[in-house]
Length: 331
Image 1 (cartoon, one colour):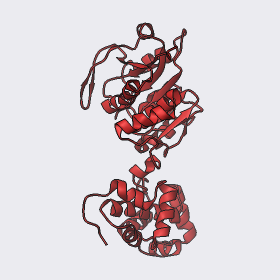
Image 2 (cartoon, rainbow, N blue to C red):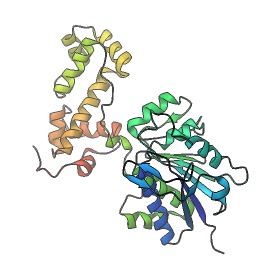
Image 3 (cartoon, rainbow, N blue to C red):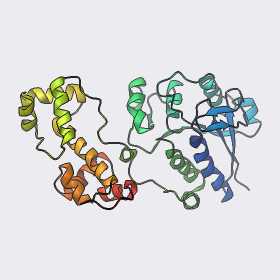
Image 4 (tube, rainbow, N blue to C red):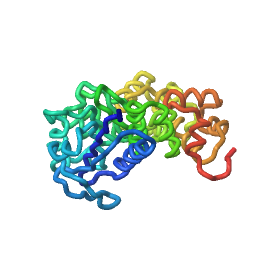
């Protein structure tokens, strides 16, 4: 007896990033070519085509449960992201459409997923309350601030909590779709899809490797601003707390309190983050691991490796292999 077809619905809206749809869609299409039973529909709140930053996106149907269920029971709803969702008002009709699709009385979807900032739409609809979730690293703090009932995991590539799934930025939608295929059709088929698309079956490391390790806002206190500027100017200098406090004319206790209150970390934690950020830049520019360790202030390859493991979840050599330029090696 053939497996039932799993019908996947992508909910598009004005401003959506097309890759948030086309990336996962390629995964499901490839899986279907390899024997998995998938079908899909791209819908919008009113059924009209939508404008996107990269051109107009054709839509198959309105986000009407009656219309969509006529094509087969909806198995999965996928909400893509847009640049406007983290801060702007929700696009017209998006939340009512999402509510209609997720609460259809007859056969509610088996799972609901969001790609990138699509998590903000799920959050606004109340679907992620008291759940674990992730989103693009650039917007994870905003998601946590705006929706304190959500347990945000900023470094995760994708997160599943019950029937709800969320993913990190843009191409992480491919990782999320592969995880769905694996759950539906097994690891062997998902692995074949990954090979066909030339992507990782499971991406090594978390999404923090794609961001700077130093993501704090500038401090308001003038003396503290001078301290962090000095750290950024020469990460390899002696930046132990007594030295920093002496240069600022403050006690170590006062300096530590300023770091905690305005930057949410300790002096040592901030210095390590600044050195990791410096090492990221050096490695991406072609520096060797040893050269990056010395010039960023870690001193040894092992110290750099431990800091990268803590903050980025990858080794310096793996980071260098993924992000370096084609420039010649630097000493």
